[in-house]
Every structure is written in structure tokens, then in C-alpha cells.
Length: 124
Image (tube, rainbow, N blue to C red; front, side, top):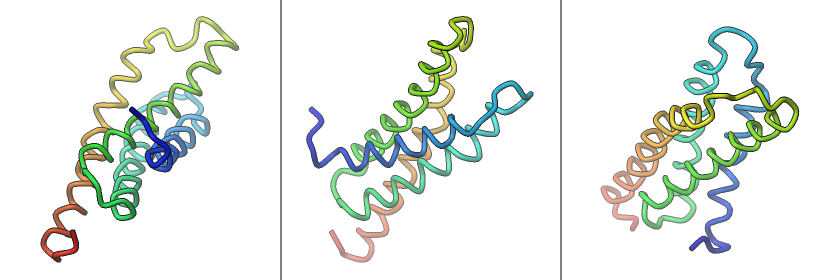
């Protein structure tokens, strides 16, 4: 169950997903891969580092919250495009799946990296 204390992590992810998708022009060739690899992946890493540093609770759950927020940000642009033109985003499930394949490992890497650093430093 999502509680109020989880909303900042989801909001961080949503901002990254929205910036990545709303600023991209998908009519150009290769734009999707540029957005995924240069904005969403590093953004997920940075957001999970920030979010775990602030909360210091369950790195896996933090990574999932960040990924969920990024997925919501991606979905907001996709739904907007579908309302404008119903023939756009014909491969919606694959688009979201590819985004998650890149975002989830980056988010987990960021949160577990900071968790490990805090464990070594003794700042539980």
C-alpha cells in the first residue's frame, strides 16, 4: 500500500519520466533509445541515490517506487499522445517494458550502492 511517505520517491521518478518523454520528439529516428539511455536510466540512478539517502529504508522498495514513478511519467505522455491520435504508440506494452528493462536495474544499482556505502560507513 502506498503511503504519504512514499510519495516523494514516486514524484521524483515521475519528474524524470515526464522530462524524458515530454521533451522527446519521437518522429526522429533513434529518439526513443536516446531518451531511454541518456535520460531515464541515469535519472533513475540519481533519483534512487537521492531518495535512499533521505529515507534510508529498504533499498529494493525505494528502487521500485522510483521505477513506478518513471513508469507513470512515461504513461502520462503516452496517454496524451493516444488521446490526440489513437494510432500512435501501437507498441505500448513493449515501449513500457523496454523502459522498465533499463530503469529497474539503474534504480536498484543506485539504491543498493548507497545502502552499501552506508553499511560500510556504519550509518544505518
